[in-house]
Length: 110
Image (tube, rainbow, N blue to C red; front, side, top):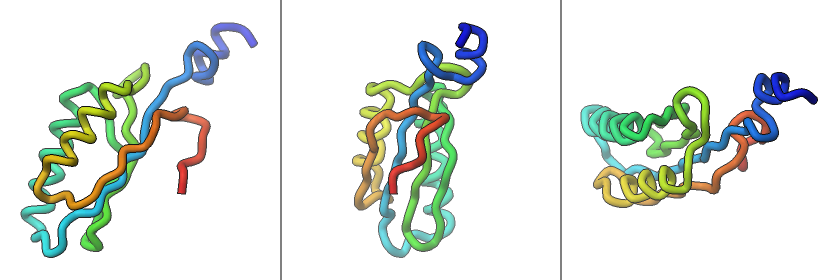
């Protein structure tokens, strides 16, 4: 496959990596507290030029996928920073930040 096609398909040297994030939020979060958590999370994610797809609900679960905003890959440093954010946030009681994986072609782990 030629370089142009590898780039278009984001494979080979153009592969892009991201990671899954899962968290349990503390019981009894009000809608205002949940929105405040989301604002803090989005600021942390966007502050590293990353993008997040996912969210949570009133069931206390929060999950999604983090990847580089635009072309490129998320890094282990990005993973560590966001894991530290989740660990330190009062709204989060448990979290898991999974390993880097292909952001385009691998099915999410269950």
